[in-house]
Length: 323
Length: 262
Image (cartoon, rainbow over all chains, first blue to last red; front, side, top):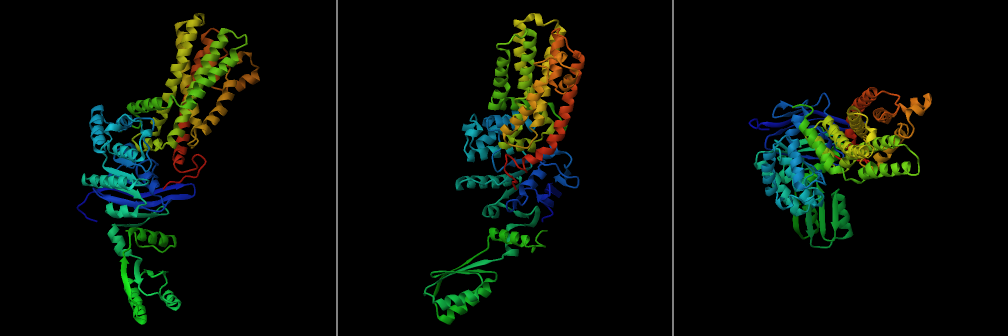
């Protein structure tokens, strides 16, 4: 972590239980100013509960701490809440209010003057192409438009940290592209962004750092590139054999490789050691004088890293991937 | 930043008033229900104008006060807008006051119109200006009290309005029948009058009786004091109970389904 960058958000010992279920278990992390941090995790990992703790929706326990730009706002929930702009997964604007009524309500609640609300709301409506929907009731808007209104509502009071909860969930590829560009644009404006997502490809594309959560704990905290380099659990090796294999040859291949899929002339091997397995496969090809084409080596994705980590954590195998 | 800000409370009150005044349960339980109940009570019976006045004013006030406040939290839980409020710089006290005041204003406006019309038709009921002011003050207090009572019932962390309205009616009707609307406190035996003292509506009907020169067992001043005490007690209870149940609106069985969004 670069020492020159300011820390925008510091959380310490975040904990939340619901009866016997520990939803968030002693979570601590920091986020640098102007960075995009993704929170990944399976359903029930504690991502949303953690965000609700940070943003003051759930009351913090006495041992928990939330600092914004090094100011401890743990015990000042109103000041803390003003620092965040939240874009929820599902629209939570007032459905019977018009777009404009929602914006003026939010602006008033965040303490903006009428002139400030008018100026900022008009700017946001223009930026997110909602100008012609200003008098439409929110319930009549499409999901994509509602999501854009949510972004406007989150940005209205000029927060220092934007939190996006599953921002691409349920959106068509066109809207996903719009949201992705909006996120990157916000980063360019210097905003600090924390986003939760199930979409690993998107996280890999936009995040500077990812926190992987499971069972209420952070089990990995690194950049997507570092996670891939460090873990890289499996590589997919794909070949096309130009000769039809006999049953004996098929059986021999299955005995050599533990994870192999044979489909007609296509061979797919899931490998934890690609160099070793390529050599083994080459030996097999030479032994029977086979002709092979279309060799592909498919690199690990963040999704595979994610699955690997969650599986290992569930089996109790991860111990040193959080820093 | 202060814990309670007047501007925030006014904004919330306005929002609640605009959004929920025309909702189905509010119209049914706040206007239609008391209207038909009054009609069925009055028609075909020989009831004095004093008794009709007390019945109409107290029932209108009580029913309208308990109409808006219980529907807001279930609807906002369902539509997720409650999470928007809790994520904004708004305290729980402000949320509760915003709901209570919207409901109180709704109740006060409707009850005042009904009372005003009644007093124009039967001006002899009004004995003095002070008595008139006390009638309207009593209506205002019942608006607050009824709103807080129904809001307390809506602390159950559900997103179904019908669940709450069933509970509200379960509380409301016994209090109405024990509230001295149909049988004045003075006509009850000592045993049954003690039961009637449980209902806060008793203190409004007694206050109205005192103000129109009917025989009242409890003095107007005492009625006002008891109504105010009920309001303070209900607000404190609301704060404690809602503080406890609010997180459950996002994490426990909401609307009969197990919801644990993460």
